[in-house]
Image (cartoon, rainbow, N blue to C red; front, side, top):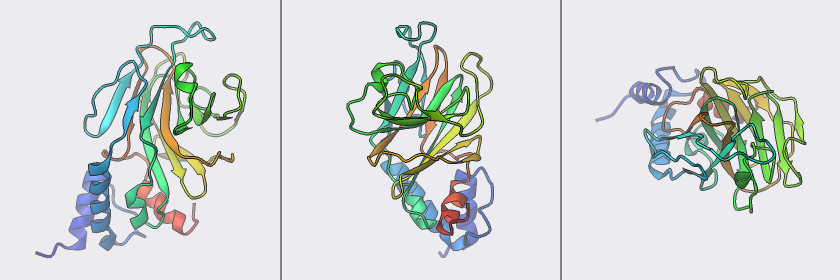
Length: 254
């Protein structure tokens, strides 16, 4: 039985786009390929969070964690930061090849409370997850911070955190007051070593910083006891339109 392209498109949109239609520029005939690639990605996904005091099992393709840190770091006695990373290293999304850009990784973290989201070098002897540090403070790591919306970076040359940062995007929570959930996305181009972030589905722009050329893994930190995070690598719909992004990157249209 020959399944019409419109059926493939409908299945894809209802499963991974919350019913939102694909961008007009995308041919209906690409939907079958995207579905196949998406299922292949999910079936081979082995990402798992490590270094957390609470590690819930993977449910619906996402992993949920709560900061239960009870020990207070010496440098910040009023806070109990907890950092998490995903293993193994980031891999390009297989569906991005179907859409024209074969070197993009993307994930989203749903956060309640203060946090930082970004990437950290894979395989590096890291102080980051032993020192209760936010992403971009120590080791070789790069992060988008909730309290000020700034981009923080460390090229493995910081004595302590927060020394190197620049204006970037919108703040998305304060460290001291938990508000509504916020979804922060992080994208990484394996070919150009560029990265970008999104906030609740809104593109925040490309990061203006030269990243160390290395292999990276997803990372995020929760600021204090009780803050929550949920990481999604694509088994659930993204808030950000990653399909349109990958397609437009082919035409350098962003």
